[in-house]
Length: 372
Ligand code: NDP
Ligand code: GDR
Image (cartoon, rainbow, N blue to C red; front, side, top):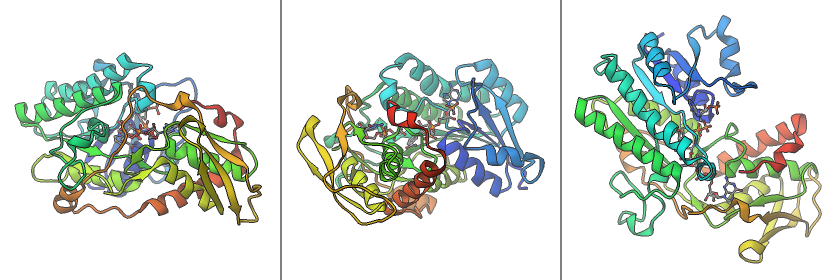
């Protein structure tokens, strides 16, 4: 054990689960905040939790919620963390248009509650804070890219969703508390990162789940929204390593974490289907675009040539869209010594392989009808 204590909000989410694993490996005592839910919501961390009586005695969950200051203050007082990773959020951009006030409360005010709790408890000189900021702050505006065509730490922000607007409050209040009170509080401006643990309603996981289900004959067609959107996709495992590094510097600073490569949703679909030996051709435009099977070379997956496997459903369009995201990781590479281990091909391979196993063993037909 290294005697350091970490507190993770959002520990039951994709990033929280990988970060908990990383910090446990490094010998931290890890505390996590988990929301009370009417059904189990700890699938991503059950392997850590169940180990509690054997290997990882240094792992503890606390019931809590970022909307409840009293709860946040009490947990931080009890835990006395050296590091807080504020990953808890309503993190779905499209859903944020349906619940804008809630997202402001959790993603915006929730960040303030963490910072204030540390200040009220007199932990300013002890506790370092990582804030999960996002490339959604940039909004994808062409004119705001740097001279190389990327978004970096100096690019202006222009959020395009209630989620982005809430997160911009989180970004600035973190920076303000750093400047006003000398707190070690940093923003990681992370571009999209995915994994086999990604929530099923984000586009990459939706695609890899459907690829597996269609290939195995359990789903007919995948319905998507904007296929032209471009995203800089990395692997969540690489990105939690960057979060940790951000809190180990001599001086608190904000960092962009990205791969520096951008890909359309359409090409992500192509890559996913190629993992099950299927070549696709896209035809038609806008709402009428479809993808059909050109060839299927893997005998394990029986798909007829000419079958339509992707269609557009306009309900997945967003009222305002972020067309393009592409991050410049120069500063994080130079100052943090951070370098991603995965490329997009490796990420897609891992996600499709994992979903093929899930669909074979544990398919739930409801997944096809999930909105997101
Ligand atoms: P997830 O949606 O997988 O996880 C979000 C976590 O926040 C879950 O543990 C969720 O709990 C918890 N949560 C939601 N609402 C509350 C609340 N009111 N109080 C306390 N906890 C709450 O997100 P990711 O792991 O993908 O992302 C982690 C963070 O990083 C988020 O803040 C996200 O906005 C941000 N981010 C993510 C990026 C990505 O590409 N993944 C990129 C940039 C930033 P429950 O399990 O109960 O729902
Ligand atoms: P994003 O991720 O909005 O970038 O936010 P998401 O995977 O939801 O969308 C990426 C792009 O794909 C387009 N798209 C679809 N998206 C979804 N969810 N479902 C569809 O059917 C679909 N069809 C096309 C979207 O329009 C969009 O352009 C993620 C979240 O993790 C945020 O919390 C995080 O801050 C940002 O990444 C960086």
